[in-house]
Image 1 (cartoon, rainbow, N blue to C red):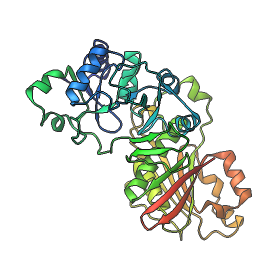
Image 2: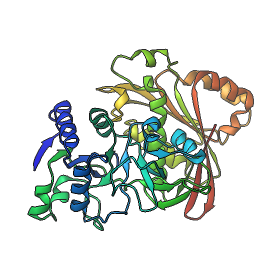
Image 3: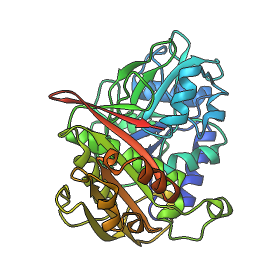
Image 4: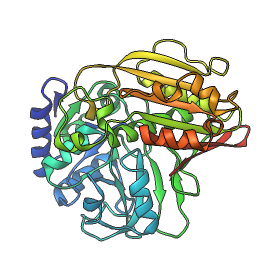
Amino acid sequence: MKILDIKNNYQKVLAKAAKVIKAGGLVVLPSDTVYGLAVDPTSKKGVKKLLVFKNRWTGKAISIAVINKEMAMEYVKINKNGENIYANLLPGPFTIISEGKHRVEKGIEAENGTLGIRIPDNKCMIDLIRLVGGPITATSANLSGRRPNYSITSFLRPLSTKKKEMIDLIVDAGKLPKNKPSTVIDITESEIKILRRGDLVTGSVIQTFISKSEKETEKIAEFLLHKSLKQNPSVLRTAPLDKREQSLKQKPIVFLLSGDLGCGKTVFSRKIGKLLGVKEKITSPTFVIYSEYKTLTPYPFPLTGQGEKVMTFLHMDLYKITTERDLEEIKFLDLFSKNTIGCIEWPENMGRKMLEKLKKKVNLILINFEYKNANTRQITIKN
């Protein structure tokens, strides 16, 4: 068993991991959720080693990680529900169960022929898949029935000497954030089913999330910020832009947050600000209309390049706005400079004309917060 610190030599460690996997070896590596176990799912040698290590009986499915929908389609059949999920939720902490095409080794697909697919929001995994030239398994690094692991130390502690000797390589990325394992969604039938609840849980309609706590609302905020930055990487990028990024309009990103009082809009806004590096306490600016925070953004997003960037987080509350003139007095449209990410609560109060003007200047993400009961909120992303 060899342990390599990925922080010391990223490319060299990944190249070594890819070589081990292609040779039928077992690799422990970090993911966007927990530490996972990776083998080539088309390798009889690799899959056998994985099943023996996990104490997993053949027939209990093991998900695989791919880089995009096109690679997924080589291994599963994607129905209409799948098309919507792949377009709106992935990449992200979701495992999507579909009908398999039986192109993996026995022990990967479930007894009923279904297969779980992950497109992880994790640079390490995606880069490794590219080096391998195909999918890798995406099962948590633990023995069956045990808790997932967020550090190599906790992973190794309960293992016997025999189990440790089965591991060919460990890619150590230090202690991972304590995210839950992925949410497992079964889309094989017309009705979508949640088989395992992770940090993010969808509702009955694609592009809806269910939150049962402030922490879960914060997780949803992080997921949506991450996704919006992927679609508009120039907002935070410090490294030179590539040709694709140069062709994009460098517009600010603005979340429009609608919904009744107490639905989580301010919780969502606070998390966005915190992720962007705001150190001050963020409170709802109901009486001052907006608060502007200048910050050095440390947000660890792969497309932003290295280093930090000075930018603005704009938090607005339009609850007390009654006319368009109120917005003109604060020079509303001028507040949205190029390097701005904003959250606007009660956007319906700006009026249709002002909304149309704002749409021309920024990239808008419309989000509705709906109160379901004392402990549950439904958060819907609208087109």
